[in-house]
Image 1: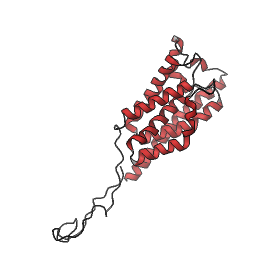
Image 2: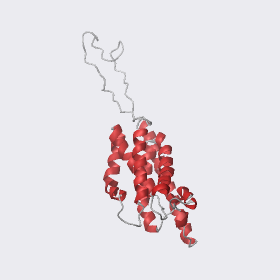
Image 3: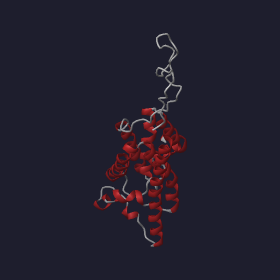
Image 4: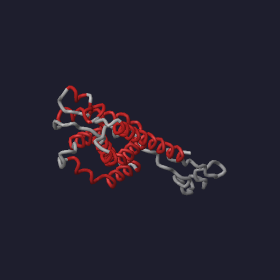
Length: 227
């Protein structure tokens, strides 16, 4: 049953990640259908009007190609966070979403900054760094997943294309890494599985040749599955 519970948690994490990503596609579809331009609702640094963009910028994308590029990383990284670190997830998402946007508003170039890339880099930084810090089986697995799938995205942390907000990437990643250190003990590591043969004692004169059992010498399993 523990395995079924673990599978259900993974399914729920995926559904929630998929739901958020679908919302982004709905917003983009409505924007195109209305022939509108939502970019002015993004973050424009150090202006009062641009301050509200902290709330809206991650929901707005410049084009279908822009949103398509962010879709798979969002689903994978949100699923990894919600599944692997459910107690930390709300804090991480909120801090990267709002904190990253605030840093962009304070320090980024004077241009409209939009897209969920900052959130993606924040999740990436958190999940990868936590695997290095905790080193339990699940954390290492999620960290390796992030590294092999998106390790090449590190080039997005430096200014290479004037049309790409590297500031969003950089601030998101820094917040994610800092949160990994701050929250590394918040989610308990998964329980390791134990089996019937683990912990068996050799027959000795002191044990009366009964092993771990009662007077009848029957071994009573203390194994437990993964939580």
